[in-house]
Length: 99
Length: 209
Image (cartoon, rainbow over all chains, first blue to last red; front, side):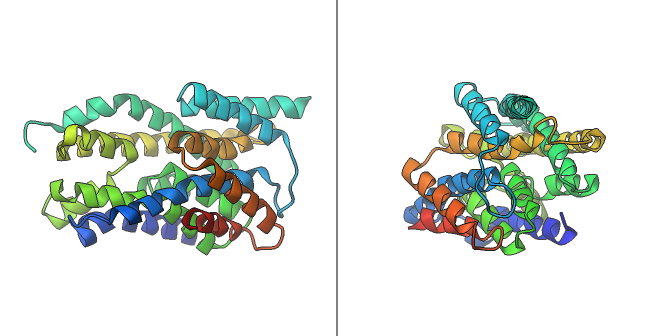
C-alpha cells in the first residue's frame, strides 16, 4: 500500500461525507439519483468477490478460498456476525489447504 | 433536537462498537499481513473510516491495480454517504469545524440510529459515530500488531477474509441478484484483458445500466 493510495482514498471518503453537509446542505438528492447510487452497490460487491476469488493475473481458478468464502457467507446469512463469519472463512480455507 | 445526549448514542451503538472493534482487528491483521505498514493501516482506519472502502483498496492494490480503479470502487461503495449527509445536514452544527467533525462520524449505524423515529438526533450521531471510530481504529491497531506476528497468512486462511467480507456485505445490503451475477461475470471475463482493477469499473457500469 503506497502512501499516495492511503491519502487519496482517505480524501475520497472525506469528500463523500462532507458533500452532504457542506455542498448540498438540506437540498436532498432527487430520489431517482439515490436509487441509481444504491443500484451500483450490489454489482460492485459481487465484482469484488469475483476479483478476489480469481488468482493474481486474471486467471480463473477455483481455490480453497472459494470454499472458505462460501462458508463465511453461509454463517453470515444465518447469524449476522461479521467477525465470526471471517474467522470461519479463514478456518475453512486453512482446513481445505491442509487436505 | 434537545432531550437527547451523546451518551444515548454511545449506549445505542454499544453492540456495534464491539463488532467494529473486532472488524477492525480483522482489517488490521489482514492489511499488515498483505504488506501494509501498521501505521498506514491505522491512519487509513482513522481517516477513510470505512471497512468496504479499505478492503476494496487492499483488493485493487494487491494486484498493483491502478489508483483510478480503487477510487472508482470506493466511490461506488460509499456514495450512500451523499444521501446520509444530505439528510442529516439540517441537524449538524452551524460551526464549520464542528460540522466537518460531525460529518466525519457518519456511519451506516450512526445514521440509522440518528434518524430513527423520524427526527434527526445530532447527539446520538456524535455518540454512536465516535464510539465506532474509536473502536474501529483501536481494533485496527491491535490487529496490525497481531498481523506482524503472523508468518504465512495463507497457512491460516487469512486471505479468504477479503472475498468473505465482500460476500457478507452483499448478503447484508441485498440488491438485484441478476445484476450482481452479471457484474461478477463481467469482472471475470474482463480481468483477462484489462489492467488490474479496471474490470471493477465494469461492475459500476452494470449497476448503472
